[in-house]
Image (cartoon, rainbow, N blue to C red; front, side):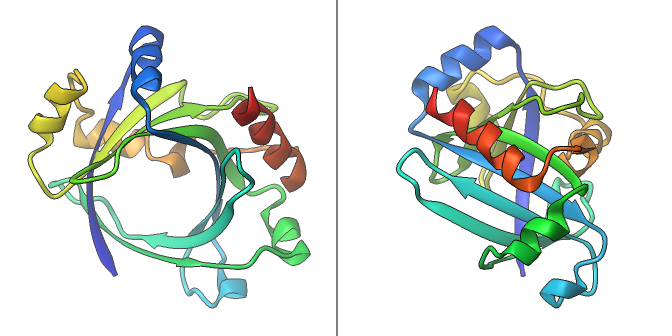
Length: 186
């Protein structure tokens, strides 16, 4: 079990364009949230993430996360899984977020810009862009480097976790994947 420590930042379109120009790498990322994960041998809820890049590299990851603490930390456990028709069926009508994820830095902090892809209905929170800084160092160093101001408070952070943003889409699992792949290839 790892401890992740991160802050989130809402940004406008202009800032997003500037950050995209600085990005090192971009992937498509889709995250589904399930309350019952016994199929995967988990006793609690989980997140299933499917990521892919423009070269056809793909990865499926299952994760469980603990509650967010006041110091912006939470426990996280991740492992790879293999996609199957059963998983595609399980994910249908589960809360989901779809996005392009731009990596701005990998070390000593992972800094990403998420651009949310609109599916068949609006997300639960009106958001198009969200930046996350995950590090065990001082956040301020990276805020200055990328000109990020006003990190979300702990209450706002909870509102903007992906699980709370997620919607129940009527699109089939494969349709969601194809929608994000089209956006990635633009």
